Length: 578
Ligand SMILES: [Zn+2]
Image (cartoon, rainbow, N blue to C red):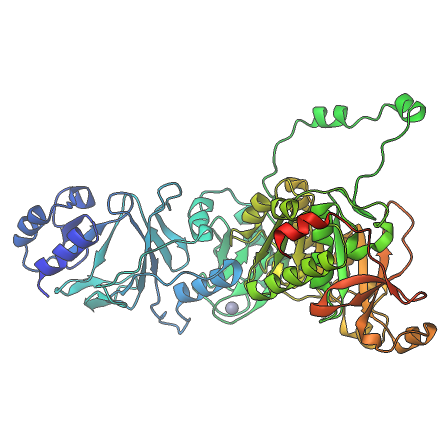
């Protein structure tokens, strides 16, 4: 390909604006990137004056692209490629970068090209983090052409070579930059959580090292105080306080190493505090003299707007109980044929949002089909129109809709915001199971579990919906057959402590089977125990029986009968042909 072939491709096919650049990467023309053109003939004329010109592309709005420049050169003292390591840390903390158009630079660096988002452009940041630059508005990059570049590298070494596309330039795949990367270019301007001289003097005192701390917005960088280091190899996260040396692998946190809290204070929503206090005041006389308002229970024990848990060993039927509750609330009918006296006082009907993160569309469709058919053929009242209107069920099909990342921050995946939008105005939202709605962090970490539950509580607050989360019972409790204990949930206790409501689902034990004379196969039966309620006396244990297709229906072991509510409109059913 000749230089003109390249120019044609960049300008005509990709719509980029170009200008000639000297082999040392400085512009040949006055004004530099400001003289860039997207007129092919003009460009050909411009480039014909310089036989050794490289092609410069103006980044940002003018070409609709933004470039992440990752420095992967090896440091002379053996310190590993810093830019590459920093990218590893970022992807670990925030999420992976998409596969997008990329080129190799003569020094071994990497340029990732992103499509510019009109409503959320990146900012140009040279030294965004150690080894990383972002070139967007008001900047340019050199792209592949027939000519060789010849320039002095950052370390003073001469570099000679070509820029080369790493993926087929004939089918360029330009993706948008992830939110977190765009945010990092903005955060770079934020003020620090702690003064740099203070940090440097603490390190000097504790570790006897003179280090240079630099503020990168979301992170500080410093020379590592654990090994002999001349580079900004250490990253200190301002949001979590995590300390990581990219060279020697040292990991710690500021509390441990410096005895201080570094976590930046999250920007809070401003509120009219006085208004909140005034509006929250209880009129004492009215409270005494009038009939108090009732609790608004979504299902017995779960108050509107609260977060609750369904704890069960794997394979017990949490999903079916969740669906049973969802169908009940969306229709205002008894739960699973009448759990907790809902045969006489069914839940108030309302919108229900259910997010199944582990089950496929086929599985969920089959379940809904089984439940509705079972209900209708057993005279359980059901209004299909209301069901369609009120019930929103989503299969995430093995996807991890992370609400928080491994640092306990709201994940940049976008699911937190999307779920708030979807569940807004719901009376009940079911998240199944808990483990999928967070990053894969240590399940025993109370700090991270607290962050996860706080994120879920804030969804409840923002949507006005109460939330039921399904969660696996721990192996210990399952094996010891006390999975009906309040502490049976797997992992950190923070989740259990924060929930205002909890039900445990357990299979019938042999001992329990012996209490009832009429049970032949105990595996068909599940015990539902209300292990935590805040606003009423817990309802007594109840039993569910598994029916065709896994449908759970209330069962009375004493009578040996399934409990179903009164018959309903048979004509309607005929019309629906069910
Ligand atoms: Zn180190």
